[in-house]
Image (cartoon, rainbow, N blue to C red; front, side, top):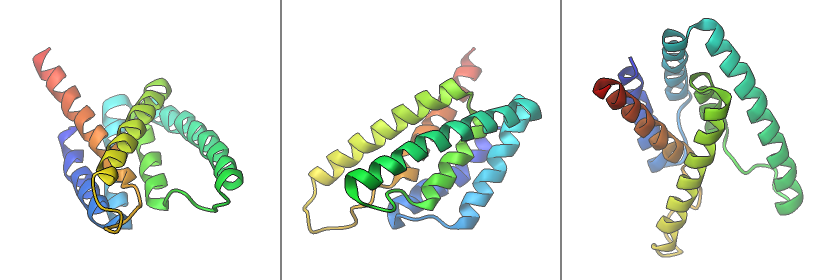
Length: 154
């Protein structure tokens, strides 16, 4: 069942990396499959609790970051709405502790990879926006493939 989500996830990854934004219908299609996959795998009540707890965690983290960015950098916006929606759409699949580990690891890998990528290219080329959906989505893609292979080998 996890394989059904890989195609829309791959579309989001490629689209975000090329254009630095995603289309709403891509997110809605991915979200529908994501919620359906979570309900199929974990059941409705567990998926609902995952969404509730993880959304509360994301709101807390987002609020603290918004205040920090506002006072530190005097910016109103530091992350796109597509990135925010995508991260919220990941919430039904993970238990809260696993979700926090996943976010920390995937954000760290995305930032390290993006730093290496921008450091090795000239300063006058391209877009300075980080393709967060691409980085986090690629980590999620790898996680789903790993889980599927692990189940098949067990």
